[in-house]
Length: 405
Image 1 (tube, helix red, strand yellow):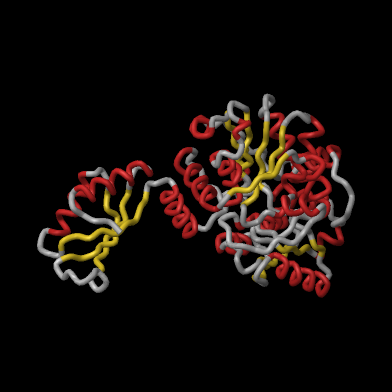
Image 2 (cartoon, rainbow, N blue to C red):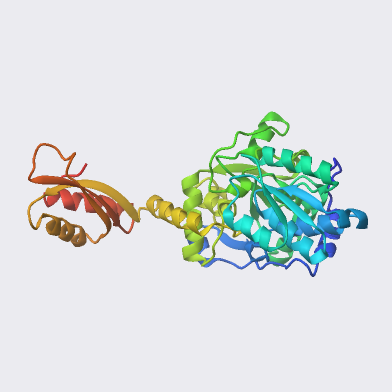
């Protein structure tokens, strides 16, 4: 199905009719707390409410429904880090189409297990998306399967573009849309729809700084391969944007920015705390962009954040929460010298408590504490309110005779 054809508003409207009844129209509520912390009037397009937890269902169903009967019976295959695989697995099950997915080794366990529960044949192959794609092509040739590209197939792009149609209907006074970018199928389809119907609305792509696929392509004037680096936004780690995506995005996307990992971790934490919503790293990058201070021109504007998915491994989520707390100044670690005589630890704990902090963990380091056997170094992890509170805690401990460092 992959081709160099363009994707227009007509194809996107056709996709909307084709997927109706099989893919839900996701809510787009206003967020008062996110508006307060960003200075913009924020609405969240909650694609994590889809049955498989991401927007990928839209393109998957649109592509599957356009396959000829013979190809449907034979089955399809795709390489995917997870969400495209989930969308194909679920809608393949509904439509009676056999699905095989090849997932790279870094794919989250929760996505692998869910694909299997949905009846797909799952093959974990390759260190990155390119290697997984090579394996998928090999299986497609050997078994006569139809390959459906996760972000560059025109049917996929058109399906993802239905997010834009829904957004414009749900938020008529929209000023800007912030959209995650990995392979680029979502932003390409969304931008085509939005610019055709309401060209004044800014479409801004947000990448992880570890996976700057679209910005690298725009600089080079063509899609280029970006070396894979570890990122919380695993759904964006496609190594490159598609050729069709590139041609559409460079004409319709207004701006592309990148956010660092610490901002992504903090955005996941903010969504959990303020919106009571679990999101994956890729879905957190629009909020990360707003919090990072790179989009000051959007203050006071009506801004939609495309919350693209919620499929994050619970163990990863717990680690991300801790990283977010550290970035937020609500979790700190420091070393201090205390008396190793009876009562020394109690005095130190009392000093921490008096400063309003709570000790989460403490460990003694006697072997490397220096020549004074009456003193010991402790490594303390404490819960604090913010970075100012950390500074106040350090000052208080020093004043009470507990040297730090």
